[in-house]
Image 1 (cartoon, rainbow, N blue to C red):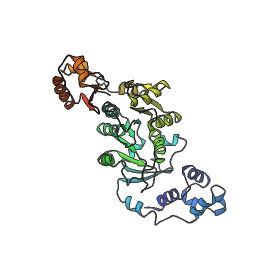
Image 2 (tube, one colour):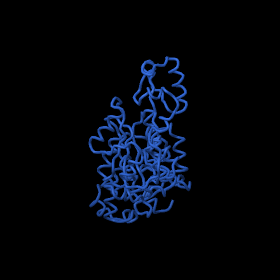
Image 3 (cartoon, rainbow, N blue to C red):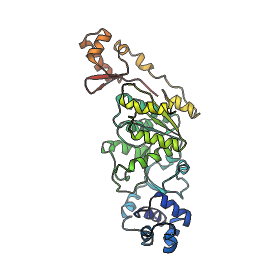
Image 4 (cartoon, one colour):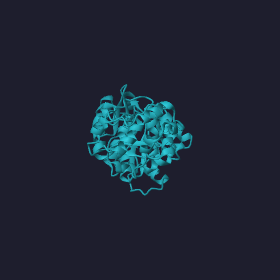
Length: 360
């Protein structure tokens, strides 16, 4: 690790020296090496005495040893505000991180992008929507940004990676930790074909207060934010609020009036978010050139199964389906199994089933 990176990272490790204080020091003294060289008196004019003490103690070489080893991998990077390829979109937000850790394709951080977020406890339809929308948007030139959480985030990353423009995962831990662990394989795919990024130092564990901070970077990197599914008290709504504060567009996919995971999306729509039914709606709003795509529901509507006509998009049980379709319960069960294998239907807890519409 060169002295320049050591200086940047060393300052970020000083207790009490957050992003706002870091930027204040940069405005006062310029490069980190000038900050380390500044007199104690001049430092205390800008920061508290404990922070000034930390600066005057010098670069913490021993604490930087793990980072030195991590940077031996060519896929790993530290990107600072002084770097030409620092994400330009983040310079537009009120509190850009002074430095970022990145693993993978750092060039993606300056590509046109769209955030896709939503519930960790996604419905099958919600996950399908997130993946399909993200795949289509990625094929149309927008890199997909999300937070590597379970549910909607993971589906969005899969869709982005499957498309032409890949995906960015902004995480709330150090990049030597995968959280949640169930997304370990997905994180490796992102490191190889996309990029993972964090403002948190190596070794930083998953802490609740880190994730709202992470959210400002998710929408900060993006031209807009799509909320796929969200309850009324959801972290996704925090991301949407941050997007509005940063001057980004907010989009929401409507859902069933009976689903708690639609309440947050519907609230956003009432507050002025753009209601979208396909990826083309987002591209139109952004005035982004799009490729022709099939309309939502075309494939499912053409499936040769009479049960789909009786099966709406709200969860329903076998007995109700048998009554509405005029079929026997045994026939309904057999058809549901086939439809589930073909990806037209998803089984839900409580013996319920829900139709999955092609989306994007």
